[in-house]
Length: 355
Image (cartoon, rainbow, N blue to C red; front, side, top):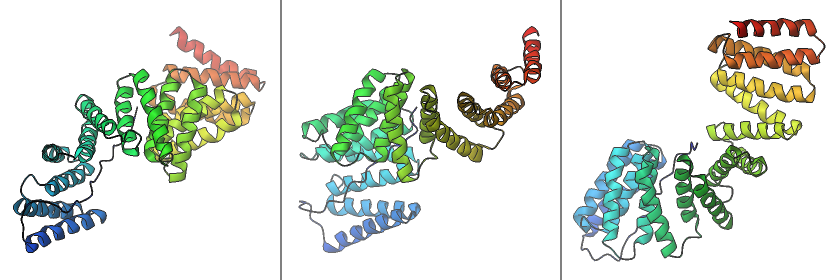
């Protein structure tokens, strides 16, 4: 699953060489409004930015005409503002109108590609992949036609298409797109970007689902390294990557690498979800198993005991997850030579099995 929210692109304001006739006073008015909109957006004053963009567009339309290139840019950028604020219904028609304007002006394929990407990202945010996919495909076609298939912008389009394929279970189609996007980002010095981290994570998910742990491991570790450098290891993607990588390390017998990874995940989940959450119980069990494999039974025991109590409280004493954790705990007790305690737990398990 991909938790990344796509980031729409603001298109730089283009002035001039325009055929429309307007007065310096008119030009000055909408330029001031555009500057005010940009400044307000940077300050996080989105209501002020919205009103300034609207005034600027109104001024541009009067001075330059409704189909001017500057109007298209302002429409796109107001749409970005709305999209950032999850106001998708307001953003969508602005993107469409901007694209329609650029399509009337030869040589504006780059702007069209950016706006197509923005609109596709909007649909993707709304879980409307069927609407997003053809827009990404068209944008990628434009990048290729312009000889820009090796740019970071084209890589975003590739990765976004891969996200859709991955979400639809078409991993055979998604994998080469992710790999190509990563190669392009690396070539353009963007190999440590948030987009690259997300692509690495999704590739890791694909390989992990196929039990290709040798391929998944470097993908997960690469993504985690980027998130650590950015101070974003608390995100859902990062948590899943650390959890899965810890499990891979355990399966490979790399216990010294698995332990800190799973400990960090458990600490974050306990802090964010509370000490009695089922995700905390899952983390307890996974870390306990690492300690068990290491022969560190003293460290594993309290984790198993807490996992059992959390699961009993949330799921009831007869739930399969509770019973399985009790089985592991009984096995641990036997390893420690505590046979009577183990037999007591096993008797409880047998009693549940009979009822």
